[in-house]
Length: 354
Image (cartoon, rainbow, N blue to C red; front, side):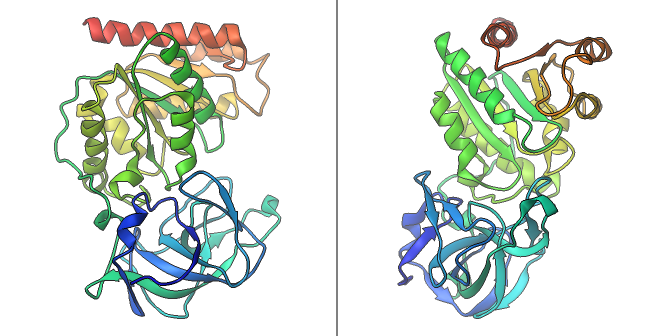
C-alpha cells in the first residue's frame, strides 16, 4: 500500500480515497493518466505551489513527496511539456518535471522567457499500481464514457481565441445571471489539461452541476482522436442531463484549434443543441479568426463577444461588429453584462419552447 506522507495529491485525482489500497511498482510504462509518487528535488521553481483538491495551495519543499499524474500540457502562455501518448518506459529514480499547478508531470518542452523561473525537477519513487498493473485515472472514477448522446438540454459554448483570454470570468457572470433568473445551470470544463480551478470557478459562481473531463478519468484532451475523446464528452453530457438542468455551459480550455475542441464543434449530436456561443479573445484579430474557425466546424448558433482583454478595444469595436454581424459586450460593465445575459437567456428559452 502507498505508505508515504504526501504533501500534495494531484487535484486531477478526484477520488483519492481509492488510492489507499494501491501499491507502488518500481518500473513500467506510464501513459497520460498514469499516476506516480515523486520526490521533490528543489524548493523553488515553476509550480512549486500546488493546488490541492480542496482548492488550497500547498508549498512544496525539497524532500517532500507528491502524487502526480502523467499528462500532456500544451499551454500557450506557460510551461509546456508531455509524455508520449503511447507511453514512456520509466523506473524508480527517473527525473521528470512538474507541468502545472495540478501536479501534471512529464518532460518539459518549453519554458516561455517571461516566466522567469525554471520547472521543478521531481524523482520517480514508483508508479501507482494494483496487482502489478500500472493504474490510470480511469481505474479510480465511478463515471463511464458513453458511445451515444441524444441530449435535450440547450448548450452554450464559452470559447476563446487563446488561453487566459477571459473565458472563465465570462462564464462565471453568465452562470450568476442565469441563477438570478431562477435557472438550474450545469457547467463543464471539457478540453485542455486537467485542473480543478475552473471547476471550482463554476461551482463558486453558483452552478448546480460541474462535472468535467477529469471526473471521467481524462487528464488531457491533447493528441486524441475524436473516437477517443467524444465518448468522455458524451459521458459528461449524459450524466449532466440526469440532473435536469435548464442549460448546460461548456468551457473548452485554450483556443478553438487544439485539444480536441474541433471534435466537439464538429459533432452533429452536440451541434443540434448549441443555442449560443460566447467568445473571448485578447484582440479583435484573434476573435475574428476564432469566429471563422468555429463556423467552419459547423456551428450556426448566434455569436456574442466579450471585449478583448489586452489589445485596443474601443476604436475597432464598430468595425469588428460589422464584420461578424454580432455584438461585443464588456462583461465587466454591469449594464452590458446584464444585456448579454438577457440575450443568452432569450436563446435558451427559445430552444426550450421550441
